[in-house]
Image 1 (cartoon, one colour):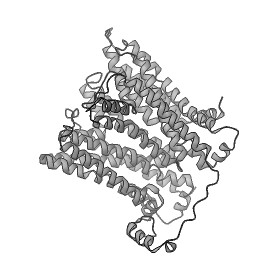
Image 2: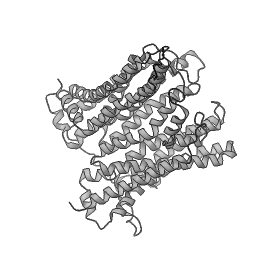
Image 3: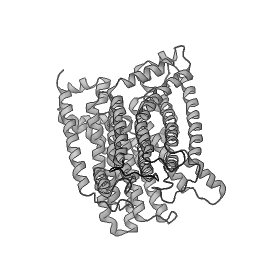
Image 4: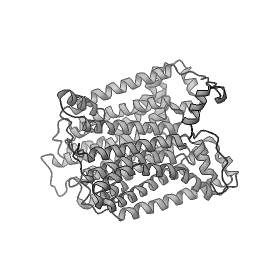
Length: 551
């Protein structure tokens, strides 16, 4: 047996997080089947109830897989680099290919155990009446297995090129989000003028596991207006996922094979040693240079906030401005294309698309920014130095939160052009846009506080980031799975109660997105999420005060 698989898998299974994930997933799978289990001796012979449960069951397993699995391969190689053990591993008698297979086997072994814990729910779903879809439960697990290999290969590739664990987690989750949803958008936008473009769109959409899962559960294009992936989506995805996983594996092995043990940094060239033309060009290009020497910290400025901005790579102005510019371009392009009538979208669909865009960015970037506020200090040993300063725990908390609040606020402001276009098209939607922005502000505050609270509870940044993503997935994505099963198997009251705790669903309701207008979610959602934010802020304050005490 590969010794790396044994070490990775055993170390992972001995943690409390792995045990909680296994039993939590098994309990959720069993509860999902019990909701629709027949009572009073009445059974379903045509398989309708089983198919209804299979749909929610399949979407739930796919969402859990895409949100839980990336955290493990994303840190598998970069963790060795941070600890200084990667050089020892590369100098061992094991080849780079065997090292890669060991890391991949450790991640997939834990995924196999997670899926094994859900088999009893799948068997009960089949016993409920079977599935009317060809393949049924077995084909669903084949799609989930291919998605697990694809995500693991993607995470290991990012981990081989990353320098820090939090950066690897952030990049991996962004890549998984892109692989899952960007092919769907491209499939929708590619014109079908001829047979060649139609084939290209079908195979490009096969990069995402969503069409394959939708075909397995018989939903077709449900949830994606106007989309028709055609038959054979499962086969196309299995082929594309296998090829992309193999390509990523080859690239990762080559990266490990040529990884130098000692990397010499370039000496660089001083500005005064450059030519006159180069110096003039640099003066123009670097009018706004976030890396230049800045003035001292003002008397009334929180020094912790300034320290976070100057020491955190993603907190610097260059990365923030790039993200804000990209978000503004996407929102404006979406609104202009829709306003031109090319897609036949209405104002409600435009608002829903903007809400989904902003919510995805907040869920992706806010935890990665906030999850290292305290845990990164403890992990690097600088928390002891921070305690020796005359700063109070309250000022430390305020500075930490403000360093995350400003980039998140810029993300919110970046989509304003899209809302301006929407209000221009339909001026009476101004009040609607105001409610949407309130919902997104509440979502941003909740995402930041979840990451900050996790950072104060967990000692390592990787564990805090993974925990923050899981909590946000349970609150923001989990209720949407219940919404997918509206009317069958879940009733109107059950769906409305589940969506009440979801700030993303509340924003979609405020935007009058089709499918959410029949649920009364506001202002109840604001009270629920606001109360949760107060609790999380209290947890953060208490934990920082405890950590601030002398040991």
